[in-house]
Length: 421
Image (cartoon, rainbow, N blue to C red):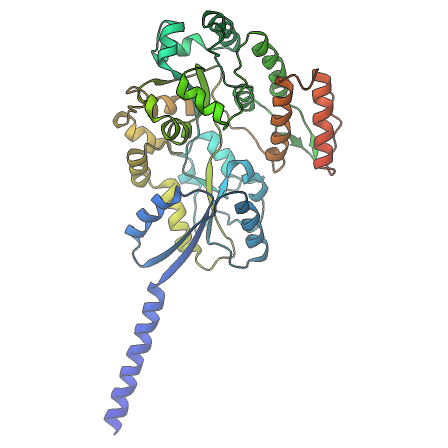
C-alpha cells in the first residue's frame, strides 16, 4: 500500500509539474488596431512564437479611439499592444498607461536610433521617453502623371521634373502655363491641402506652447501661397478622398499629387490600377511626411514581455521589415532595413522607378517637428478653414484668423488665445 501511495503521489506531482509547464508555455496577447495591416506582422510573429496565442482585433472607423481610451482608462479588457494613428498619437503618448520603453528591460533607445529623425520625434513623449514604436515610413513626394509631364514639361524623368518644381513660384508659373495650354482642363495641384501639408512640415513650433496658441510663420505663409495658387489657376479644387479627386487620377486632369509613401499602395494602386506605368515620383519645394501608425504596450498588462517581442519585431527587426518591404512594397521606418532592400525594389506602377531610393533620400531631409496633444484637433480646424478660404467663403486673411482663433477658443477654452497675426 505504501508503494502504491508513493507511486500515486509521484504521478500526481508529475501531473502538477506538467500542468505548470503547460501553463507557462501557453502565453497569450491581445493586439488592437484601427488598420488590418497588422495581420502581416501577426502571422510573422506566430511563426517565430508558435507557443503564443495572438488575438488580433481590427476595430475600424471612428469607434477605435473612443474604445481604446476607455479601455486604457479603466483597465477593463485593455489590450496588451495597441496601434495609434499619428493624428491622435499625442493625445495618448503622455498617459501613464503607455509603457516606457527607453530603459530596462526594453532598452529601446539604441534600436530607435535606426529610425528616421522625424519618426523618432513622434515616438517620444513630452519628456523625451520612448513610448510608441513606428514601423511605417511616411515620407512624402510629388506623385506625377508621366504622360502629362511629357506633354507640358517636355520630360518625365523624375530628377528633371524635381528640378522644375523646386520652389512654389516654379509650381505656380507652371500652373498658369499648363492651365492656358490645356484650355483649363489640367491643373498642377488637386487642392489647397497640397500646399498646407507641405507647409506643416516646415513649422518651428507646435500649435500650443505653455498652454497658449501659437501660429507659426509657415502656417501664415500658407494663406499667401494659396492666394498665389488661385491667381495662377493652379488648384483643381477637388476635396481629398472625394470621388472627383480619385477620378482626376484616373482621367489625368491633375499633374501633381503631393502625398506620403503609403499613397502609392493605398490610393493609386487600389483606385487606379489601369494607370499602372503612368506615374513617377519627384521632390518638391520641401521634404515632408504625412500620417503614420505606431504601436505601444499597455503599462498594466500581464504579458509585457511577449508584447515587447511583438513591438520589437514590428518596429526594429531588420529581417522582418525587409520582408515586409519586399512582399508588400511597403516603405518602413527603419534606415537600415530600407537601405538594404533599396536596390531590389522598383515599382511597375511608377514605370520601374526605384522609389525606395527616392524615399531614403527624402527621409533624411524631413525635419523633426514637435507636436502636442492639441495639434490634431487644431490642425483640423485650420484645415477646414483653409478649404473655406480657398473657395472664397472667407473673404480676407483677417477674417480667416479671427474665425480660426474663435473656433480654437471655443474648442479649447482652457487655452490662452491672444496671438496677433
